Length: 289
Image (cartoon, rainbow, N blue to C red; front, top):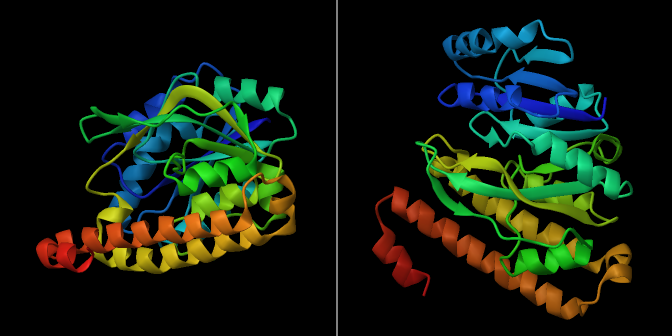
């Protein structure tokens, strides 16, 4: 089996559309691992009912947590049982283009030594209207080039537009545990990217921005502040590593400065988001000047 799609589910609002996009894949030789991680027993039951048509299909694994677990434990629970050579983790409100797996099959054949691949994606709202689209990147780039562009705001990253080597991910212990949620995908992809990163210049995923998202919760935004600081420290370690420097064309001091500035902006943006939720944006906007 070459591909595993890990579908982690906590809600049902857009689940049918997500499942329909899996049925529509033009490349159907993939394993599907469904992980039902809802908190409410009624929601958990509804999720299983919606997934029932899949449960008797070959190469479908259904997992159900007794109690809701954290994001990292949830993802790594999928990684532990995956049989595919490559794995992607799909959110329960995102939608795959019919050629998603087909295109990742193509690029993984072209760059067999690469452990990390990603594609363009669209941001969509709750009615599936496109809000924006990610930028076009080179088909292949080094880790140092990716970090440089990421720190300058030109590498959009989310969970479900990445496909990575299952073996390499397991070898490093699965998804990183240094952050609670925010940045765990970014840090994991970077840790896997020493052999470079492949890119598909087609929008193969619709990433849904909606009111149920993790980042729309004030409590989670406060946790995000700590995760941002941790991300900054982890990327600094990466920049300072001998392996990174051996492949980098950028002065070390320059990238360290870019890292500092990038995360200052991220912290300010998160504080402002918190202020909006607490209805105090004018005071915070003045404070952040």
